[in-house]
Image 1 (cartoon, helix red, strand yellow):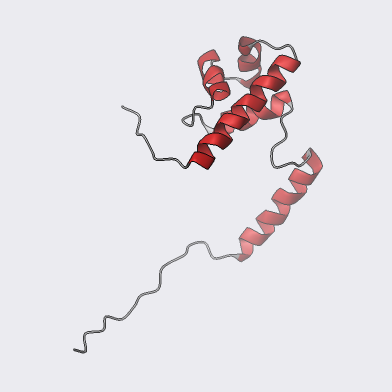
Image 2 (cartoon, one colour):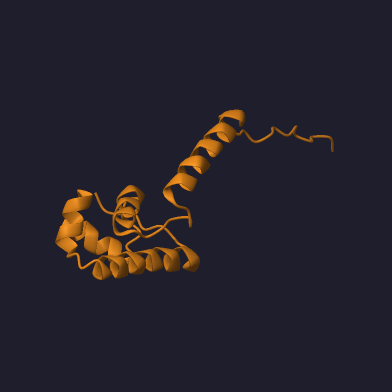
Length: 111
């Protein structure tokens, strides 16, 4: 099945590229090979290389796992703060409606 190309904003492309750069830098600073990090994350060496190259087709779970392993902080929060924020957001989400529907507008057929 061919990959579907989606349009991406330059900001999103830059963010993906930057995260890949941060992961690569942290890996090198820890003196880890691509293969060793890929094995530890449970992913292929090719996917690891694509993450570092900033490929937007990589799964977010794999990217976040690799970032966590090499110590790249996501959302500028430590583990305790992140866990607390997740629980707070879970409570907020429980109060919100499950679905959002657009309002129906009556057709104005009075000519």
